[in-house]
Image (cartoon, rainbow, N blue to C red):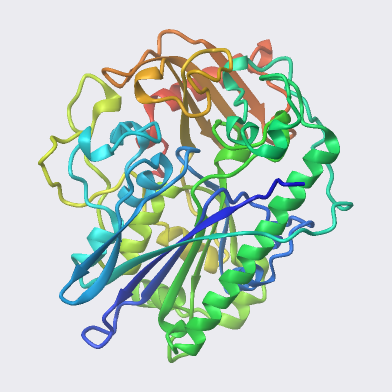
Length: 483
């Protein structure tokens, strides 16, 4: 078997010069490409991830974190500055990573494909590394591809419904074109786009994926141990996440490139290590800001005081890190426009004050540590484009170029439902047509988290569907918590 899963890991190191100001922590942001929530700390019984699980024991686990786009990739540029090597992220074609590194959503960035550069279409937004660098941090990024070993295949099972459901429109299907050109898959000569991978072969893909996750876990363990060796762990905040998820046979699909939950649901863990005293960084923050004493032993003895199921998004990472670094940024203000999806667009040379279309997670972290709940977001928003309704190779349904995009799928995830609508999209004006609905999907996550049964056509769901459609069209601002 030639097939091998490869993971790409990007480590963004945001290290403050503690000799100048000691009040700010070091920040280590670990981004694992294609990582879904196949981790022990997310209750996946097949996952062997002892190092990540150990991190989660000392941090906050966000069980409902979502990407705004399920398209990856990133480029890394190296700059020499004052005889020091400064490695800055300059993402050229990555909608998901561009989104959370700028704190802007895909429609604001006008970035929907591998081949476009967002600064050519919109303003000169300040990125997360730039913002911290401008405020005294040294920012670096390190990229590496890891190759997995094999683990026993017998424990892995296929998804219960390893088929494309009859009541879901074909526009939602992504034909996993990335996988088809690989030598071992190509030898199967599967009929495009619907013929399924043989079950034993499919199990080997799942096996390889889990092996890659375990290998990444091992590398992350070595990285964290190096923090100990370097004697900086106590003053380092670690954030672990992914740019998007990955389908492992759900709906007979083997990739991202969709609006299904498996493609946009990601792990997010934030760990604040103790300093010289016996309180975590977050506990110190709570006591400083709210003058409340918090007992670490009580906090860490209760799992629910480290886990939150509040809905969060990757665009929240920028404002959260900025807040942790004591250089907070505001929510982006609304700019008057006849088109909601063109708000916050700037001219090519205009450099705005840093702002975000996400919100800081620190209030949620504080309340979680106190075993309390607070009002939070109503929904998470994601999207994915298509060239046509039917799956295609040319143009590629999974990775259409901007000029090939004729349909946009917008989706939101609430506490109980996922609602997705596919509508016409004019690529020249970046404008969706909300008056024409090509297809709808509605899944009840209380009973169908796997999203196998589309209930959008059921008469009894009409009221719910209308409410969710309005919420989706109005956008992320109307889903923010009200205080």
